Length: 266
Ligand SMILES: NC(=O)c1ccc[n+]([C@@H]2O[C@H](COP(=O)([O-])OP(=O)(O)OC[C@H]3O[C@@H](n4cnc5c(N)ncnc54)[C@H](O)[C@@H]3O)[C@@H](O)[C@H]2O)c1
Image 1 (cartoon, rainbow, N blue to C red):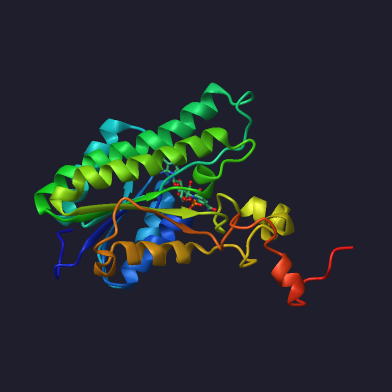
Image 2: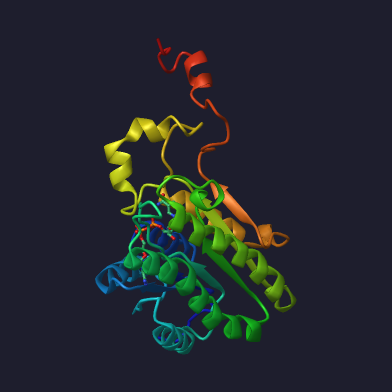
């Protein structure tokens, strides 16, 4: 399983579906070797299998990122298998909608353990590898709800604003070693995580988005491609929205009505 042809290596957590899977396939198409981490092993295997169709080395790793010991073992194995790690995407995350009063211990623990602690465990595990290389990119998954919080999404939003803070601090701490750290900030991107929202109440969401459509996982993958490329060499510590402009103005549908593309409200 050793790295061949000096291909660069990307590790993606939560690579078994949704945004993580799109990132794996985007980079596989562009000749990266891929390490797919997911707690859902059959999905990780499926992503690795699809990635290999582009002629690269892609391996699945079963790992629940909330388990610090398992995370260290997994990154040691990845380092052994591929010899280097150029990019880590801390993408795995969970989403629960509940008021703070109604949030159970389980909901609070799971949100904090996966979204914050898991991201920290994976980052801690990759830092020595990237420091030794004197190069690397770390990309974190934030959320619009970490920047503009909403009713029932306080705990989720707090974990994502925590990730935004960690992105900035990590960027400063790792800059001397040639490692850049940035984050993507999606709004409603059509993945298994939020598909139910898109199906159940499309118009209420669409009417908040100036571009009037939902995001595609590939659009986040393209942002990750840019942020980790040489084109973005002077960008670090940033959280970049990729969200169709959601919540940027109070009446995003007004221009659509004026353009005759939506009916006037009575
Ligand atoms: N889809 C959106 O609209 C949206 C919006 C804002 C932020 N995000 C963030 O983007 C990231 C990806 O979201 P998505 O929509 O693709 O989600 P998703 O639920 O479709 O996929 C998440 C993946 O992470 C894996 N995962 C979850 N917990 C894990 C754990 N403890 N250990 C290992 N793997 C684990 C899941 O098995 C799954 O494969 C998340 O961090 C999410 O919070 C998504």
